[in-house]
Image (cartoon, rainbow, N blue to C red):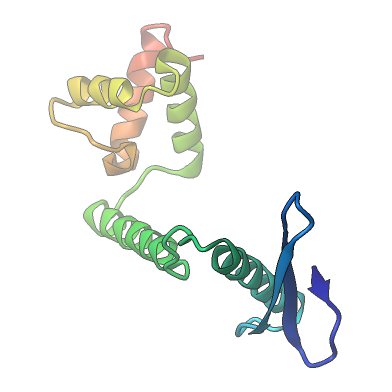
Length: 152
């Protein structure tokens, strides 16, 4: 139960009831995080509930890394995009990307390995991502598959 207070902190009371009528309860008070406002209070309530429940039943909750893993994944993805841009100074246009993905998805569905194989076979080198392709290469590929009657 969230307890209303005016001190800007999340006050959560957790009560564990047994069918015999016995019960135990505890209160957890958490400060709001850096976000403040509604999001900060929501975050504090979520943590207070999680920690209170773990404490009252005597179990350890899942490992909580304060979103460190998500942040690291986001940073890694951003580094990967920057490296791809550096490796490909002439990337395909957004329109080319849409046309290429429409063709590959129609032909291979969501089988990324299959469409990387098709691109690798066409270009005679290993293609791990369509983002490796230059604007000219994508144009050549789309023209070739359109000439074969594959693309519409």
